[in-house]
Amino acid sequence: MGFSARGAIIDRVAPLLVLLLFGSPAAAQTPTPKDSYLRNIELCNGPDGTSLESRIDGCSALIDSGLGTTAALTIAYNNRGNAYTTQGDYDRAIQDFDQSVRLDPTFAKSFNNRGVAYLRKGEYDRAIEALDEAIKLNPNYGGAFANRAGAYLKKNDYGRAARDYDEAMRLEPNLAAVANGRCWARAILGALQAALEDCNKALQSGPNNAATLDSLGLIHLKMGRPDAAIENYDSALRSEPKLASSLYGRGLAKLGKGDRAGGDADLSAAKTIQATIGDDFRRYGLQ
Image (cartoon, rainbow, N blue to C red; front, side, top):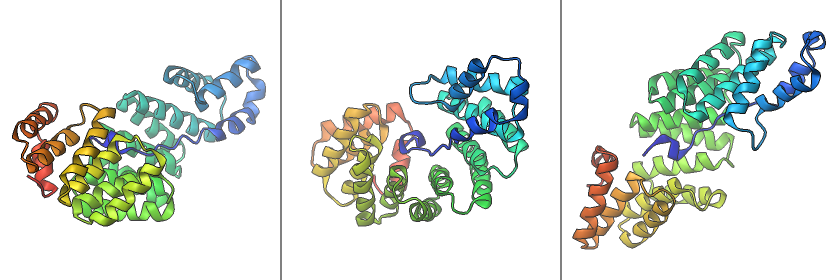
């Protein structure tokens, strides 16, 4: 299971940038044409359809102008960091989040976003440290709880992950990513009926979500329902043909139905994509 498939919750906080920048005294003295200045604000905010490169360029122009307030620069670094995270340039993203929290050590959202970058980079302990700080600053931060749960999942600490998902669900019950993540954690822990309820809730928001369908496959596999598991895994693989967990799970389901050739083929394909996938399923209680 790759964490990117389960989802991470990034906070952009872009709407604040317009007010903070345009309202700063320095803005009135800028030699930059007003329309260009406002355009950079718009790009840094990243409205729908804005490319990552344009978002980065807009934020960079605002940062380099030296005209913004501390609060505005805090958000500009955060927004650029988010663009770098989405682009997969995690080191640059982390540098921007570091700068954002240096400017405002109380800005919980940049700690959350730094945690996401570390999580996607595979540095799970550092991710947890950043997310701990975000939660300390804002104990009602549901997204940070969900992201920390994702880090605990990657460390195979399923109990802590489930507890963080519980808190995230209490705080933000309508986030599909939270329901999806808790479904996966509960499926691994064996709370199968509760997991099923979470997955069904997640599917209401995204019926073609491969990660949720993959989680459903695991639930049905552990429930001894190979036909339902195969149906779920088939649906997941139509969206993500190289999803190793779905290939491996489908292979186990086929073996359970006596389809040796089909099962072995799926297991082999899964191991080609992710060599350790068999170890993962053994931790899930399946072989």
